[in-house]
Structures are given as C-alpha cells and as structure tokens.
Image 1: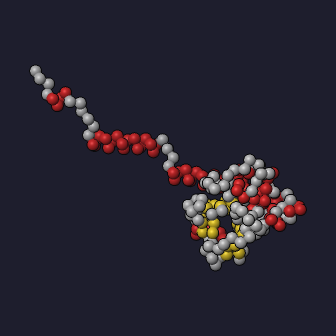
Image 2: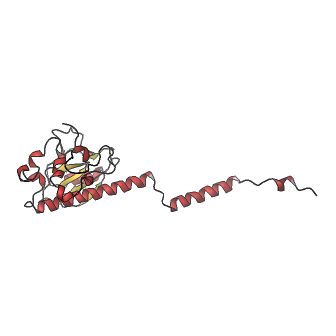
Image 3: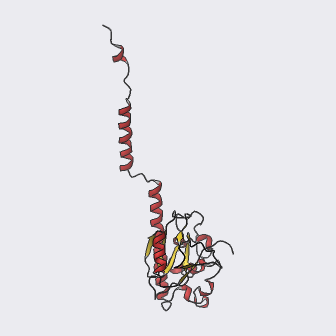
Length: 220
C-alpha cells in the first residue's frame, strides 16, 4: 500500500500560526518588563529629580549653619559664594557645600551626556555640573527657583554667566537633556518636573520681577 505524498511531507507553519507565535513572544517580552528607550529616559529623569532634591536639602542644611542664608548670600571670606555669582563660577556654589553634598556626582543629571562626574570637590568645575544656580533664591521666599536643569532658555543670551528670566518673556526648555522638559528645585527644598508651561508658572510664582540664574557654562 502506498503512503500518500501529502502524509509523508513534513508539515510547515501556516501564516496564522506564525502570527500567533509572534504575538505570544511579544506578550512575554512585555511581561518580562524589558525596558524601552522611553522607560530608560523616564528612569534617568527620576534620578535627576533625586539629585536635585539632595542639592536642595544640602542647601537647607548649609543655610541652617549660616544664619539662614544660602551660599550666594554669604561672602567668600565667610565661606560662601556671593562674589562669585557672576561669570563661569556656578560650580563654586556647589563646592562650598561639599560637606553637605558629600559627593560631586549628585550635581550632574545622568541624562546630560556633555558633562562628566568628578571624583572630588577639589578637581571640580562647570564640566562636572548640570544644574544652574538661582542667584536670588533665599529662605524667605519658598517658591523661589533655587536649582534646575541647564537646558533652560528664554531666547536671551547668557551675559557674564547669568541668564535673566522675566515674566514678560516666555521661558522654556531646549531638547538638550530631557527633550524639551526639565526639573527645578525651589527654595523650600521641593523639586518639580515641569513642562514649558509649568516652568513659566514657576517663574511667575517666584515672587520676583526677574530671576537671575547662574549657568554652568564652559569656558570664559
């Protein structure tokens, strides 16, 4: 008796079966939680928030030991950074808080690919800093902008290391770090993840006609 050719031939996968297998593998991929690029960006931004939070809390500790004044309000001769709040000296405010910050690694946003970690506060400069310094922030105004991601702009040039924000000129984020978004720390120690509109609201709520930010620019 002859065996039909169709019985002897090995059976292959149909298109429907192949699609079912692909769907099952996709479900397993999702269930295993394999991170996507969006997930990684979200995780890095959360780490940036944590770093800013530590910077803000370190500032609150520092001002507690310095007559409720932030480093930018205390003379260099007394351990502050007041005379250095112009020019490419943003790093100096963080440096005077080295004891409170413990490590220079927390003044960098992990998503900022143009800056690199310093191993200590001695060999330290703006190349190791991702955050601007709110020069006018003080303990009396809890909504004042203290620190934030350096990808901030209002279309005006940085003059002598300073970017001046005003309520009559829209402020926003560039795509340099968090893709047209960013994080800010306020004088009360809180940290916010804000969009362009949220940033503009923070500037308006800062209680000042203008807000000076010392930017961690590279070079003179």
